[in-house]
Amino acid sequence: MRKFLKLNILVVLVLFFAACQKKEENKVEDVVKSVFAINPILKDENQNRVFNATASSSNQTKLSFKVQGNLNYFKSQIGDEVKKGDLIARLDSKPYELRVSQIEYALSEANASLQNAKSTYERTKKLYINQNSSVSDIDNARAVFWASSAKVKNITQELEYAKLQLSYTNLYAPINGYISAKYVNENENIALGTPIILISDKLVDEVRIQVPEVFINKIKKDSSVKVLFNSIDSKPFEAKISEISKYASQTEKTYLVIAKLQDSSSLIKAGMSADVYFDVEDKTKTIEYLVPSNSVLNDKNGYFVYVLKNQDGKYFVKRKDIKVANLIKEGFEITEGLDKNDLVLKAGMSEVFENMEVVIANIKELGN
Image (tube, rainbow, N blue to C red; front, side, top):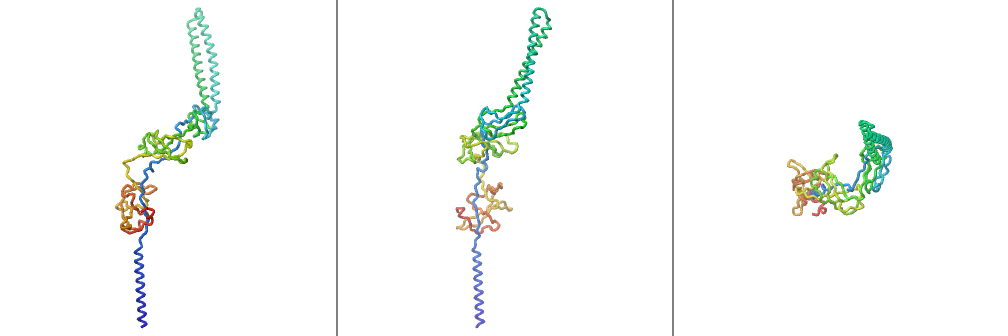
């Protein structure tokens, strides 16, 4: 009897554990993998049409000396306001003053010689009339007089030029404005034509943009752009393209484009940075989407992603072939194969397979 009872208990236990194991297996089979998905992002058409710019004045003057010398006066600082006629800088004028003095002395000697030659010519002419001098005498006197007169004229012009050079040792502001750039410092030896300072009009009414060569031919003169200054909390300023350079910069493959502001503001200062938005329609450009780089897979058949298809309220993994363009920091540019409503698997591609049922963990974020 006891053996029979023990046997029954053993059978019951075996059946119990078998049922538990089967239940546990069914429970495991019922677990559906949870994944994260994203919608492809439409590539922003403006991301290649927004360029950095710098505010400047259309009326700018870069000043330089017309003579060389030592810069012994230069007190101006960037941002200083100046008025037309203000002394900006001065070279050491002593060498030019000495030159003027030397020419003035030479001119005084030449004038004395001229007066003597003139007296001699007048006297010889009277003697010749009275037949008391020869033809050669009057010819010589006339030649000396003319030579002396020419010498005085030449030295006079030389003196005028020396005084002009002396005046060039002072540099004056040609317009009302402010100092927007300095290129040298006091006590430097300045060569002829060396830029000294940049004076800008008080009205800052344009921005300067360096545009890449791949985009320059899409820009047209007089086309409208929007300018947003980073340091000014206001709506964008309207502007029009006024100039487009035909030559690339020496350091980079960019072209200078100048946009004239329609309405300026006293808040805009020269040198302020801004973003310029170009509104250019490119009808030949295909629609491109962006997906994270780790969502894109590649095999012998090409590039593909896993998308999640809704079938009767359940989501299943499906392969979708795509064509990729460039890899940028935001991910791969997809030119074919996707649309904005696709649900692309974000990660864990090695843990899924075709037609596998999954649950989207971030379904609420996607709005599906």
